[in-house]
Amino acid sequence: AGESYEEIQYEGCGPFGAALIVHALTNNRNRTASEIRYIFSRKGGNLGETGCMSYLYDHVGLIVYKAEGINFEDLFNYGIALEVLNVEENNKEELYVITCEVKDFGKVRDAFY
Image (spheres, rainbow, N blue to C red):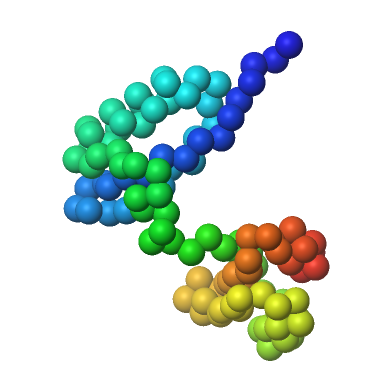
């Protein structure tokens, strides 16, 4: 039988008060917690309690497209029809960025591909 892995999340304060959330896949929860705590402290931060930082973030699905060959207005209108949260144009990097609810990510991703 193979090893059993679990996904865990750590939250804490990084250098200069930066709010950090770390997702890890581990087969040893105690070892991973110890390593994450060491990294936080070595860089001038500290590991916090569950939920201490996650309330600061919006959890969204994010899809990024290269802008070449895609009309932004068409993409925007299609996004509205799919009820995404936002469709943005990043002219500097020539990208389109679509944000959606996490629960809708698979549906939105599949609709755009």
